[in-house]
Image (cartoon, rainbow, N blue to C red):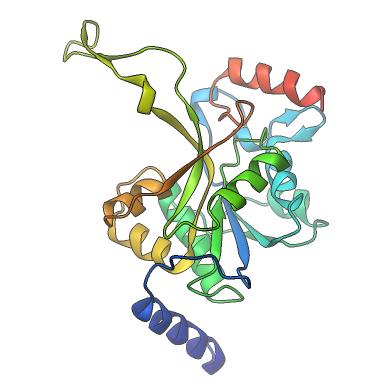
Length: 254
C-alpha cells in the first residue's frame, strides 16, 4: 500500500475510535451501499448462482442493483462477488456509481465486511451511512428506500426495513413437531434489507461478532437497538422455486 493509502486507513481508524453514535441527522449526510453477491443459492437448486437467474428479462442481481441506483442520493454501490466470478463485471460494467469487488468470503458477513472496508479505504467516512442489501431481494421499490432514509433520519443507531408478522407463529418443541408455545405476534417483524447503519460502528460490530446472520444482529450485540422501518411485501428474499415464480410475476407487472 502506498503512503497515501496508509494515511487514509489510519485516519479512518482514528475517526472510528473517536466516534460516538450521532443523535441527529447531519445535513451533509452521505450514503453508500453494499450488495453481498458471493453466494450460490443452493436451496434454489439452480445450475448457476441464483443472483444470475433471469427475472422478467433481467438477471436478479441487475434488478437489485438498479433498485439502489434509482436513489440519486446513494453515491456508490459496491457489489461483492466471489473471487472467481467474472459475470458481474460484464453485467454491471456500463452502470454508473457501481463498483464490482471480487473479494467475497465464505459467509455473508465476510462479504459485507469486504465491501465496507473497500468503502472505508476510499470515499466513505466512519460517520457516513451504508445500506446493505441482499442480491436476492429484487423487489425493492424506490418508495421503500425513501421510507428507510426518512425513517432513520433522527435515529442514533440506524435500522432496517422489515414487515410485521401477519400469521400466528408457533414455536416447536425439541422434537420439531409438537407446539411448545404460541408467540405474541404483535411485536414480531420479519427482517428485510436494506439495513442501514453508520460505516464505522457497522465495521466494528461485524468484526467483533463473526457469527451473526445480518447487520442488525451485529449492532444489537454491541448494545444498541436498531429501528424498524416498515417495508413492502414485494421485497421478500428469493429462496425457493416458488419465490422465483412469484417474483417473476411481480416484476413482469412493473
